[in-house]
Length: 368
Image 1 (tube, rainbow, N blue to C red):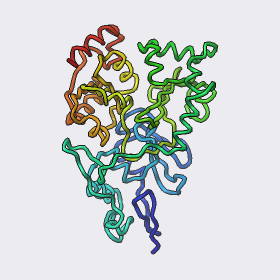
Image 2 (image 1 turned 180 degrees about the vertical axis):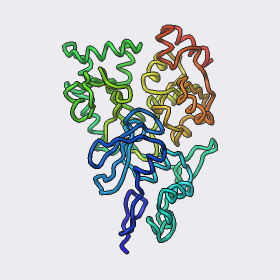
Image 3 (image 1 turned 30 degrees about the vertical axis):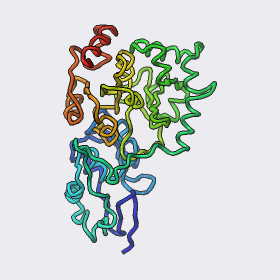
Image 4 (image 1 turned 90 degrees about the vertical axis):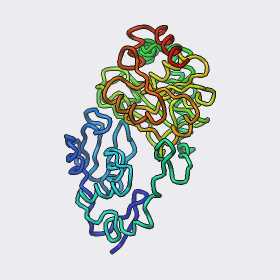
């Protein structure tokens, strides 16, 4: 039999079937609907939505694959589905799930991946806080130079998204500025975080939004002088689960540093919140020596960056008051102290209810 390698660490043996991802996902109670001959979509078991999770019966490589538009945009295999979506952190447990899905020799010599002892990933290494780390202790590299340069082009110049946000003659940009004002963000904060505006003629094409949108606010993640992610937030009549997209091609394997991560270096206290808007608003209101960061949605667990960057600092966890936020707070509790907002679902909601001055006073109080 001919053995070939794919997806970085697995092997396929000619004549042996792949896991039926559709069956595996539907077994988790996910209602999938067919959106193309080779693609199905449904809610993500990890982060919700209506059609965030996509299952490809045949990807461009010819193999089954999946991705989540929100919490895991990289096309991945069935083992990563078990590891990331089902939360199996140990490889024996991953292999057990895959054997249960119909591959009785999965993970054993002679089975689908064959010779696994020579190819399996290093054993899981955990920090003192119990966070899974790379076996060699190294944190992931930033996205490739070509991707970095594409972000520079996107952001900069007369027609870059940063300049477009300031265009007084662009009705869409005016709507975006009004939206940012409603989110209580000052011009200084908009400038600090290099926010931009992606016009509708761009977002309805390459960005792939199905609903009509007036465009998107651009939120780049800069850390240690390099771009790590670019988040797009649609403005206009877009369903809640379709408001966010990411610039493709970053392909960081092993977890991201946080949004606003550079602020940690000069901080004595770090607030960890959900989402860029809450992070920007809370940072705007925070006193000197306090950094506010986010690793994105509640679906993202603490990673090696969190373990490395937060060590030795007082860490306050201010996650949303909904069920997903409280579950996230439990996962992150190994790194810090859980703090509950006096009112409202999240940082922005509290400012809506009581004003920015009240939010500033509350942050001053909890970070003393």
